Length: 128
Image (cartoon, rainbow, N blue to C red; front, side, top):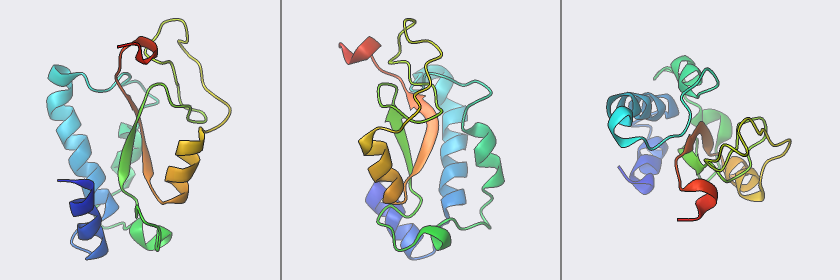
């Protein structure tokens, strides 16, 4: 589904943020070994956070009237996210955890986005 379709479902209470995150988790679990869209699947992954968001818990109620209403957003590995490894898919930056969020992350959070803590894969330093 597109972001607009998901936002419509959230707005019309046809789905909760938990529903969307659980669906996303199931899809990643199914295709990630083949696709390799994410760079880290370690103990600090978002998978552990997904489990507490059961379909009965609606994050939407807590963040309305925000425009993104809890929509999960994946961030490329070159965008700084406070406390999350941001390595630009490079061994040079392995283990780097920025002490701040990039402006775009602050804006996404303010808009109500759920920042998915598995970073999206990319060419090293986005050189590709």
